[in-house]
Image 1 (cartoon, one colour):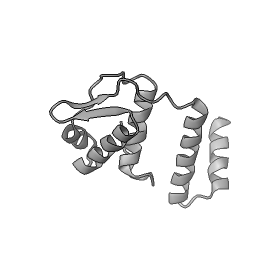
Image 2 (cartoon, helix red, strand yellow):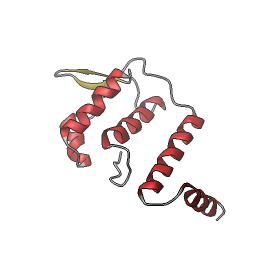
Image 3 (cartoon, rainbow, N blue to C red):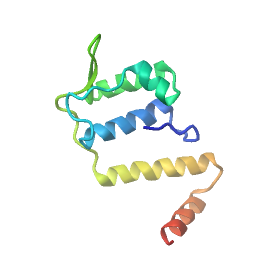
Image 4 (tube, rainbow, N blue to C red):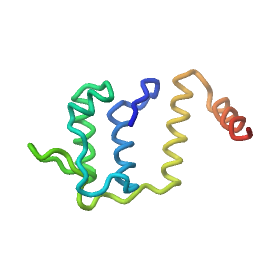
Length: 119
């Protein structure tokens, strides 16, 4: 997992999206334990409150269950995986948001993508 400081998406949301994708795709299976908040925060260079917020949001969405003293584990019946189309749309939005932060217009960003794909 990584957090991109240039991405306009808040770090907790970047982390939430990555963990939800890992759970939804089955990479993290029901019952798997997630790293403790402090450990993951230290590993990623984030504040513990950022990771705690990520875990709270994942729990509210049904991806994980947290128990004091028992850690945070993947829920027995997490939400289904995101469709490939939805995942690509999210990636496209993130790409265009990052381009905007860099001062690049949507048209320029699309032309760069077309140029890269054409290689």
